[in-house]
Length: 211
Image (cartoon, rainbow, N blue to C red; front, side):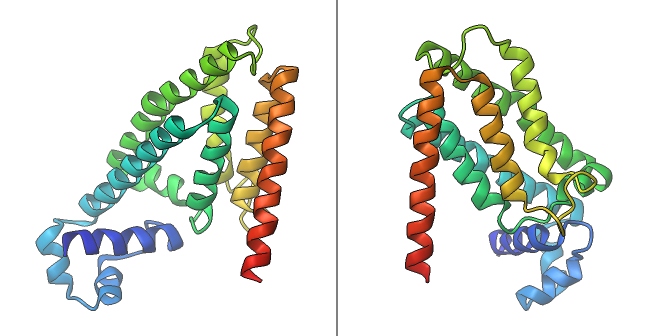
């Protein structure tokens, strides 16, 4: 029951945002009483925190899986793009802003994940790409990682990319490809283009199957 409550809360938070979803709404959606919810979670803050921990753990598992199955550093980034596309597909873009403003404890965990785990993942990717001569060896790794970490968050900024005008997946993909080309060597450029073409073919094939 505890996991079912957490999963339902996750689905509702992703779709409607954190603040607008009440404990009453979660109970109704589950066909349970609010009292049942409170048997497992003392308050909404605790439930939000549990959902955030699950999201972070899932993201970290996906990153490690992508790293282990990637053919090269650029391929790892393309695998990460696929993961982000799946994650952003049905995500309310205001969720991070709401977490920062109303659930600082949970947002602090996200920041820790961002500046510790993701920083390490990006650093290892850049070092791998430099070793394989796919990325330029004259780049400032520290500055580029920090810039990239902030760029990843840009699709959530509703002032820059309002959801009625921009698609989060499109924004993230565009920024990621731009980042890759900016640090790649000629050898890297060719590989990026190849992975882009493969990705387009796979997308078109999937659309035909669905049609």
